[in-house]
Length: 171
Image 1 (cartoon, helix red, strand yellow):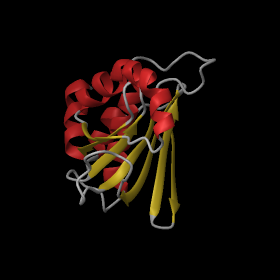
Image 2 (cartoon, one colour):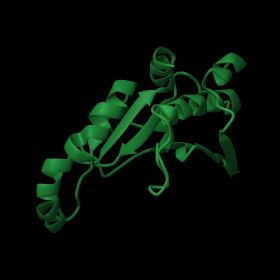
Image 3 (cartoon, one colour):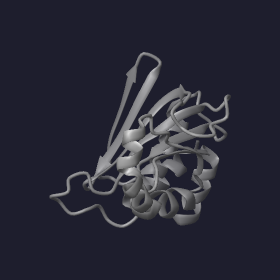
Image 4 (cartoon, one colour):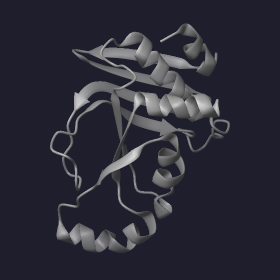
């Protein structure tokens, strides 16, 4: 990954913290009350509908927040997503096992009318792999009305190349 791609998405306010934990790495980028977090490790998932048996991601987007502290103003429009783009380039540059064909996953929380999935992640190139399975019938009944309004949590994925293509188009 060239330094120019890193520079394209860089902001001097970024606080970048990469920690190795054995063979696992965590990367957190924060600035202006926004934060993006990654865990770099191969991962299989369960607890979701329709996941292919061989589905495995190379790393995970743990967090993408434009307003970490609700008592402070949110980051500028699109700032957190630009940090995501920088984070992907940073990972490509620093982690030899990650390449453009690597799969990034995320677990999208429920949101009103599935807005988070439909308005944020799908336009960036993520696709739904499966929806969360509720394990207890009682929880399902209690949450049924909420899920009609909020939708279900979803496991999503995309290739690094797909997300960086979106980044290049939007920044």
